[in-house]
Length: 245
Image 1: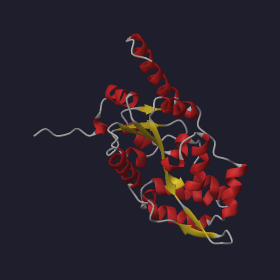
Image 2: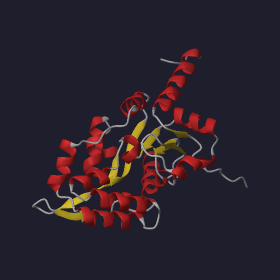
Image 3: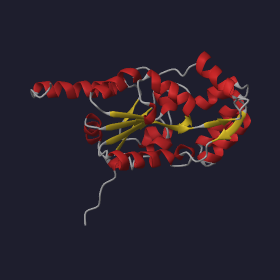
C-alpha cells in the first residue's frame, strides 16, 4: 500500500506549482500580513509593553500552551474597549510591504484568501477591510468586555485560542469548501504546524525571523515580491501557451 507523502515534504518546485494553482491561501497576521505583533502593541497602549513582550518571548519558547500564554498576557494587559479602539484609530496595524498587491492579485485569480490569527478579531478585522477580505474569511480570537467597556476576558471557545487551532480552522475550511490546493503562509511555528492539513506551507521572515521556521520550511521568503514574481511568471507562461484570456 502506498503511503501519502505529507505536503510539508514537497520539493520547492512542487510547492511553487501548488502556490500558482492554489484555490485558497491562508495568511497568518501578526509579523506576516502586518509588521508587528498585535498583542505587544496593545500592551504598549495599556502601559505594560515591556512585561508582555517578555512573556511573548517565553510563550514562543513553548513552555506554555497557547491558551495559557494568551490568558496570562491578557490578565496583565486587561485592555478596555476604549484602549482597543485607541490602538486601531491612533496606531492602526502597519501592512507589510507587498501584501495589498499580493492579495489583490490572488483575488483576480479567483483564489479565496483567509486570515487565520491567534491575535484579536477587532484588530484583524481592520486589516481585512483594508485588504478587501470578507470578514467571514477572518478567524481570530474575540475579546470580551463588560457594558462599561472594561475587560471581561476572551472567548475560549474559538479554535484560534487553542494549541493547534490554525490547523483545525484549515481542516474545517477544507471540509466545508472542498479546497484541494490550500497554502498556509506565516512566520511562526504554529503556522508551519498547520501543514498538514494545509497542502503546502510558505515561511515568511520579512518582519521577524523564527529560526525553527527558517531551518525547516522548504520555501522561505523574506518579501512578498517573490510570490508576486511567481504569479507573474505563471501568467507569462500562460500567454506563451496562448491560453491567457
